[in-house]
Length: 326
Image (cartoon, rainbow, N blue to C red; front, side):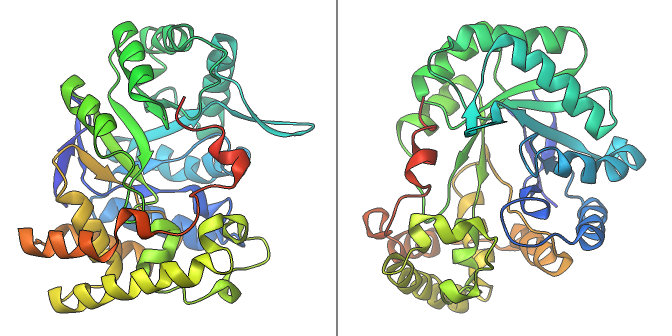
């Protein structure tokens, strides 16, 4: 596994990480035994960057990771997040200083560790000054509970303001052939400040794998059924784009998922994708993308296969879109 630095001056981690959300949350039924095998296999393959959050399964995902992380702590670069909370009326965002401290202690307890390597603000409440939040997060660094700080789905202005309070090692943003909003000011700001770009949903929430052929494949409890890109009419248009990616991938000699991940890796040494899976077979396919080397012409063809304005539907339902970009 090739390795990349987590921000200027940060440690080197596996260039491809493992997003753990789907093991406990959002993508249909759980299989904790297979997920545990997948976690161990990831570490065996040199994938040391494991990404979770307190909201994934409402703590269940952190508890799932705990035995693996504790048994192999020296092999793991562990990232978790706070900021999304469950209330009587549904999910809401809390980026207050008090919640940063309380949420961190709760995550450490569920994970069974005394420090996490990267602690993200998952979503930001714009009513709370980012300086207040990051100052509290910096206190966690000084207390030895957190090694590095990160932000997720923020604006370039918020990143600059946060970085002025305490160095930010990484910004986690949705980035794939299907979602290229970060290209331009966001990615430019990251590079100016020496901040890594951790790319989540790098295979378009499964669409770019080529394994999904219609809405009927989504389980009743799969949250993607409510995502606009998977809605009737939109999914058919998006699958036509996937067919174009599949054609280019076949000529390259890899799977569509591997082509999508290799394309992301080629966008810069500071881009670190974290494809999610709960199956060993898909993990091994994703990891093999690190060995795919794209020519400039192949990169251009993949980009052209998915024109940014051709993707149908927003990446989140309306309520989710209201929580990003602050």
